[in-house]
Image 1 (cartoon, rainbow, N blue to C red):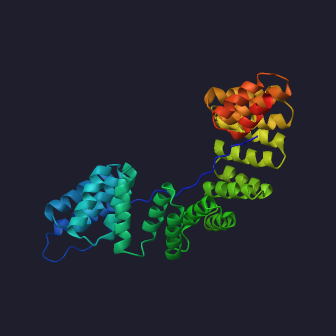
Image 2 (image 1 turned 90 degrees about the vertical axis):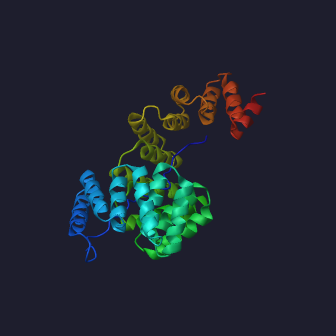
Length: 345
């Protein structure tokens, strides 16, 4: 029986644009511009974004070529979810200073948030060209390469981010996930352990560590890691994953308890219903397994594994319609379903 457990991979928190520090406007410029700008910085720091935007706009009226005012207003707009406005202000900053790597990076963040990933990639590339020591640009570019399944490219960027920032927790986590994709489980586990040593309270790191340990068949270690993920943030996924580790360790009753927790939190969680059915088959509760497979299929009518598990449970009850389930699993591309269906003939 095939059992499904979902792992979280790329889990970096989205990094906001940064405001400039309080500055002195060059001598000879209206002091009102300086006052408005510094007031805007204070408001931005206090997360009073609407008034910060107003203060930076006043600054720009008084000094139309004030680079930092455009950048800071873009930051306030970004934080206010006005991504289009933020992009315009970051672009104006770049027009005023084509060497401003922070403006390229922040515009890249806004493009990414808009879903314009090609433009975001261009800006991350430009950021790195202007500032080869920009750890965040490497990190986010690595994340985009991961999304494109360019795992070697992602690995190189996460390596660079970590070399530049030795305590970059998210980069360790995401490099670990990249290594998992490249089948380097030992390297992945080392990176997840490093990430958790830097921050013990990141639930997704513990979950990822648990999933890597499960692949190594270290079920006790996996369960301990999932325990910590659940302690920090109980979710259906984490209960399902811990249940899967218990299943694989032979603790079928404990697995069912966790799958039930997952279902309680997410009643339409087809994977957990099917996983519970698999545990019931191991415990020879075939009728219960059929009921759980029916539930899984009510939420996902094309769930091949649920057809396979239901077919197995039916076969154990001498129900000849088991062949129909094996055939359906086969039609949905499950090799084991095809094998069982051929045995029916």
